Image: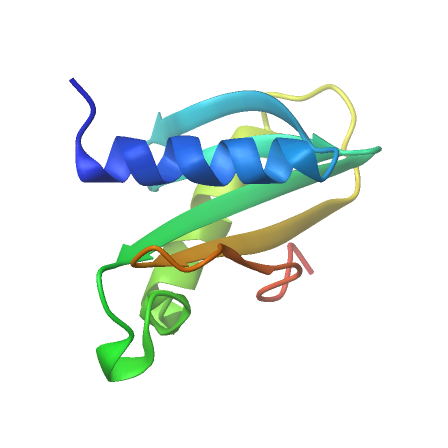
Length: 114
């Protein structure tokens, strides 16, 4: 049975696929944390953080990707990249879901590996 997080990730994945992204893996875990979705957007590797909030109080879903969360995502992404033979261009996107509103897709939500 799906929990709310899995349902949100499935919704975000379906939304991104309609925009031409292709899924590589979901819920990739390492000692630094978890990356919700890893996708390709053309030749770019996209690390996607999915955030769900029932309401937009306190800044909503996108605001919940704090600097501390970004640091964990960066560390996990660096770990993922060690599994690849060549390093593609990368970016970090956030798909914020608030209630039943359409997804808010934030491309290049924060700095990449640089």
